[in-house]
Image (tube, rainbow, N blue to C red):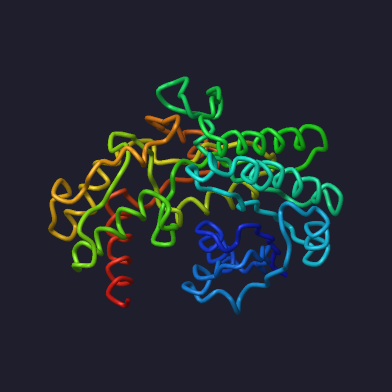
Length: 323
């Protein structure tokens, strides 16, 4: 018999890629479906996954629904990918972000402990926790200095995971994932905002792209590569925390240049800096040190940034042409 996995945030970018990955390994996949009025299942539909997975109604803010969901599917592995994950929104909705992203993780940890503490648990931690960086490269031992309500909530969830591992002997691991993108990224994220605008400008449906800090640097990789690292963490004998990233940075400006040049355009003619898009507290640079994940998990990224940008631009060109 194959294993069973339960994924919160299954309708998000990572949830779709992880579902696809686990199904290919023979898993039965269950997902938490939070009903909040909008169509959140388009990513699963795009991968033709809806008839291959089982969705269970529930919400991270309602622990009773989590206990019921875990009792219903009795998973071997639990992946907590759900969050209010847009950094800019976290300043406008800090309490909601704290409840979903922070306390929500605590709720699902507690639900695991109450239903079956032998389940293996994965927490989606974030490079945003490093914030005002304390070292040039961020490893598992570098101190955190969060710079947004989202990052503060993620840090609570991260330490809650460590606490449950140490207090209750749960096999609970955190993946401190640096920025990972794909054609399934939401339009509110800067990378998708860029590639969607490139497609619209190239096809004559948009005239310019208004952006914030073009000099911010990020360590960008492909989400499809990163879900393998999540799975590998739960296959280890001992639970631990791992940084997952490319190990090099590029600026937002360089991302724009790659995306526009792929369709034969000069980004400087179309990208306009708008102060309205600057963050209240900016995270200038994030650079991973993924050596522990590479050594202990045997994980390495397969997709370069240039390949990722081309993949995203091509997908958005196809989408915009269909409109």
